[in-house]
Amino acid sequence: EQPNILVQDRAGVRTLSINRPDKLNAVNADTLLQLTAELQRADADPQVRVVVLTGEGRGFCAGQDLGDVSGQGLSFTEHLHQTFNPLIRTMRNLNKPVISAVNGVAAGAGASLALAGDIRLWAQSGVFVEVFSNIALIPDSGSTWFLPRLVGFNRAFELMALAEKVRAEDGLRLGLCEAVYPDDTFRQDVQAYAERLAARPANALALTKQALNAALTSSLNEALNLEADLQQRAGDHWEHLEGVTAFKEKRPANFVNG
Ligand code: T3D
Image (cartoon, rainbow, N blue to C red; front, side):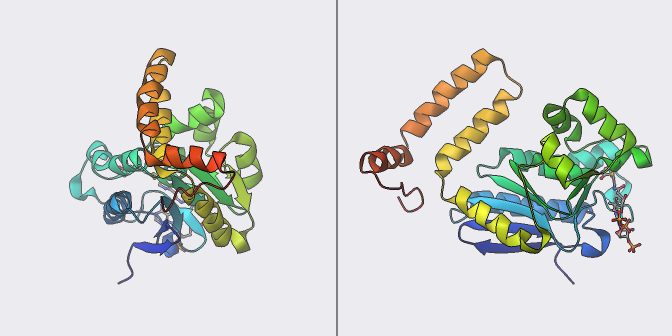
């Protein structure tokens, strides 16, 4: 039987690819639990500096597998608590950058997965659709939290209420993605981007992610205090000494093998 998640390592980049292409990578409970476990494994592995989340075939993720609304008797609430919510929390709390590489359609909870990445890269054929209202559900897996922060309340509501497809050009304009690459070079372009990120100071990036996560729900005072605490941890780390030394010696810093 095919694994639900494909795992590939290259140059400090771990790519996790949802492997249910016949269903545009719609996910069932097993796939969600496996994906969460793989993310945790990547977090714990010192060789991994960046994680890429993508999909096999022509889809990124079509959300909940509607042919396997599993949960075996679980309520919607229980199902979300046990599957999608831990996955989204794991992505946001990972100590490493997570790139959502949206190779095709990201629908429903798949759209939420795309939003939960720290960096969103789309292929030209990437499509984002808050499809939930088509089946009279509400957007979940963090969509109601992420989307209005990116596009504002009104646009978020419109996208959710009408379930309109957002294609790459509009994705860029709306801030749903950081870059769009041609379909036929997408994998290589994502890898090259991820390797650039992997060469950056890992500790400083982890602390930056922590500060940004907290700032999204904090006051300015809280953010200033947290920055002061986290800056101490960055400044005490060898990466900081390497950065300053490299600057003085007029050479590129080596944040990987320090
Ligand atoms: O606790 C809970 O369970 C609640 C949690 C909810 C989370 C959610 O994600 S709810 C939203 C679930 N997702 C959907 O409603 C999306 C359904 N799919 C679509 O609307 C369309 O497939 C797409 C817009 C994503 C793509 O359209 P298109 O025309 O490019 O492809 P297609 O022909 O519709 O799909 C291709 C195949 O994938 C097709 O199978 P077939 O006919 O070739 O055998 C289709 O049935 C299958 N597929 C697509 N999405 C799903 C799916 N199979 C199962 N579940 C899916 N979500």
